[in-house]
Length: 81
Image (cartoon, rainbow, N blue to C red; front, top):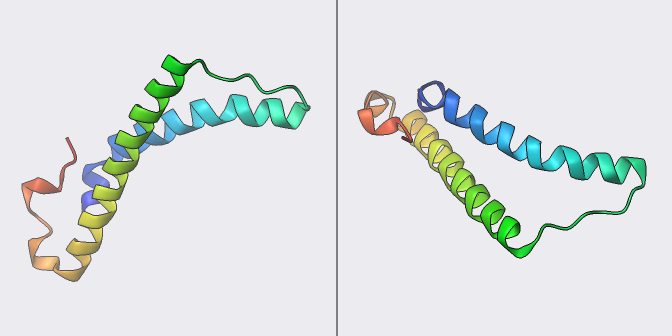
């Protein structure tokens, strides 16, 4: 289904979120002071994170529609890329 066709994209998004969350969680766990991103890095993060979130929501929506209409699940438009 849609999830299998987009497995690489889902993994890429998960790795991106993990790579940005792990340093924050490590600082919080160690009790160290948080380091803030400058405006440009924060903007870049928000833009990329929003694109990933929109893509993941698109995949989830396609998956739900495919479950609702199983005969249409083989469409080529299931791919996010």
